Image (cartoon, helix red, strand yellow):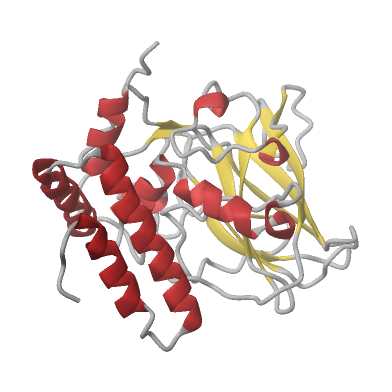
Length: 314
């Protein structure tokens, strides 16, 4: 089709997409083209702004590595990750769900950990926490034999892959639910943390006057054949950034009650001071058990990152 005017461009691209043999590919790409072209028209996008956007997208890929995924970070920072999660869980967005963001820090092959065991694998300062979790199906029945990956930051706000001072796979583990759908583990209470600002995501946040903080949370990846794989995060009820999470991930179903105890009566007898407990229930849906490609595959080299924190404009 020879282009006569700007409207012809969209129709020409859509006509070519109709040749694609895969129906779902045609549907997705046709919608994407239509919305992208309409966006350019609605925003009255200039050529300079278009080239700036292309540079932004290119830099996302250039700054992604085995230990950092800027693309996933960007998707979360505009709420796309959270939206896609909620559209695809809870009966396709109709009901509350315990599903949440995968995040950019999940790694495959977390060390097997017995129920009640510790996931602290190197000296890690912080207040001890004892976590109990239960996995139920859509009818509320306990699900036995579920593999559950858990991972979180240290009390200083670093995932092990970011921090050369932590052992490989520190604060990560893989547990299996018992006949009551229950699992338990010991760790240290995680801290909230700022997402990196060195790339295009930092530029995006500065332009909006936003802060770059995530509230403290523990990640769970729940996997069993016959059920849809569920990624989740349980957020700390005492964190000041619950309402303004930079990744828009906090839902009411995932605000966990991190309870502080100062009586010294912890489940383990080696804790003389304060400790936390967390009890949380997850509900998984029938479906296909699939694991996505891990966003990272190893530890970063060099020193710890030096965090910068943006103030949120009033």
